[in-house]
Image (cartoon, rainbow, N blue to C red; front, side, top):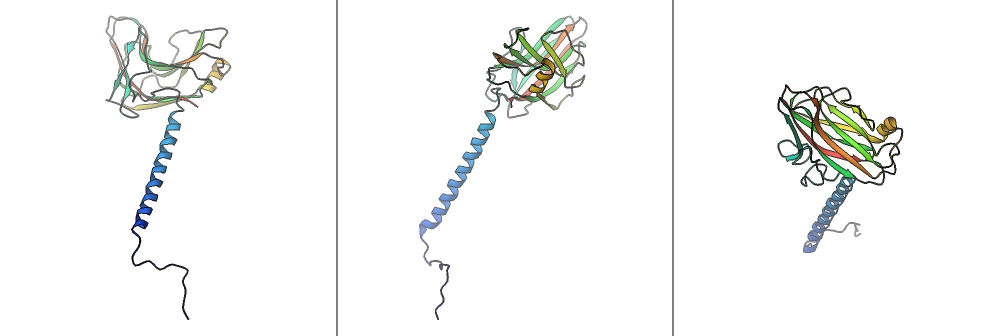
Length: 239
């Protein structure tokens, strides 16, 4: 009796198109997988309301006020990618008063963002006044009856008490009195919770939000020199 198999026996002369078809299928599958990963990463990046938060596209749209010491891009230390924003501050012994170095970005989202996060790094720190510190500031313009804007100032390092009285501002201390040198330090704040606790509500009906990253000193008296070398990178604002 003749036996039959449900499996076809291999052809002694396979078609030259069979191996090529398999390779094409694998190639198409790889292309689809790469496209899916790229699309996913693109979607994740677009959730950041801060444009160019890792400074890989130059300085814009970040800017500094005319009275500030201007920031610069640096390849010396970078937490995310190739570049970070470097802010430096120096004061000679005769100098007095206040000075700020930093960077700013303004946005106008429809909804108030929930989270602010990022990294800072202090490479050099010579204290010349008790009120020498670095901070991140979130200012909300419009939608208020009592003030033209309200703000929260997050003190990352340098002081443990408010440096001055600010009726439309609240201070939150998230770091130590002296900065840690030579390492990246992560910060993250829940803006919904902070504004609800410190201002009584989550902002609505606002015109714009200004985010500032600074190193500064206030009320310096003549007598001592001062220096600070600070980097910011991987900055995020969103949900």
